[in-house]
Image (cartoon, rainbow, N blue to C red; front, side):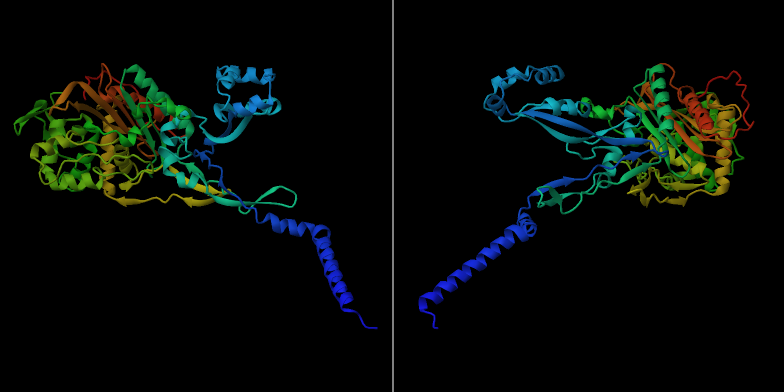
Length: 565
């Protein structure tokens, strides 16, 4: 039986219709999830994903910088008016009291506005707000930095600015490690309406420092005390290990890095031990001692004539505080004679003196891993006059930072090696160490030279200008410094001074270099009187804290002493 043309066409159409029905059934019922997923993958908005900022720890595992979460609360007046009638009394009263505003009046005065940021709400109020928040109000979660120890370590840690970037100090130096990955990531909708990330955000690395918060806290206390006691403009301090590890470093008056925006005077935020330049005075005689002994020009057994503490030379006058006559080489530094220090440097000549000045790294940055370090100022070698060399021998006519001085004394503490001071210990990612700080050192002094200098530094404390640094049952050596401040007119002020004391502790088995500098104290200004006692307090604290064994090398009976520089 033959099919008519009409029937053939009919069956073809019906067949195609049947196939279409089956296909639709397959899509809508049998393979629903598959096709939804295909469709969902076409919807891929780009968003910015920022990992959590890494934490900062001290050497004992204390958290020095962590993350906290706050909420920005905002209102859309136009939407609120359209959907509410001001009956949200409990919520509106909370907003009024917290922000000290009249929120109802603010909304009525801005009926066409669609966004007004009211401010930040601490996380502890989140659940209250979530329960009572009306239509037209909203919350935006924000990650913020929190510093539990505030002023104690603010100069080391720094802070993160409003853009989420490290602005100063460790937060700035290691920002690329701390901030984590920030990139544009794609998200997609699952068949169930949830969001899935194509890439999980990477959190920042954790930074572990050489800083000990307990020691840092005590240093901060001592500096505040000396600032108050001597009515000084500023006080700075460093506790450093012989290998260059910074255990504590601070300056006061400081700042609270949780409220950095309150400080319009940027000098309060600077790391002064690495940034503040000053003429060091007699603490710089470490270079004079080292160059004289290590070069072999002096052997340490010489006796020098100190001109009764008054020496007219090159059209100028160099003076001592005391009328020093003949002094042995070690006594020159124990009694801090400027006259004989100048004579020693002049005998060396500038070639030898500058050789060791440069070996110690003066005139260039130490390389400490903190931003903002100054290199210091050293007079030009070629044009240096003999009188300039004479005054540099006792720390005039040269500008340095505290970190440069601490580094120089660390060289004596570690046996003659120039090191790089640092605050980083190691970096971790997912509880694994990804980077460990590598020590860098170079020998610049002979072992025998170091032994002689340590002995001289011990004499400074035993019977010289540093007697107020003496400790019972512990050996300690150091050097005092009292520097005049340049007056900007080619001379020096008679009213403004900087007093310092640098110590190596314990002297027989060095574990620490301790430096305290007091800027512009009122009344007594000698470094041996205003800084040395506080160095002794820090040394005593370190001995107890680290359980350092004592000895009986120092006579604790301090006799009356006609004060010298």
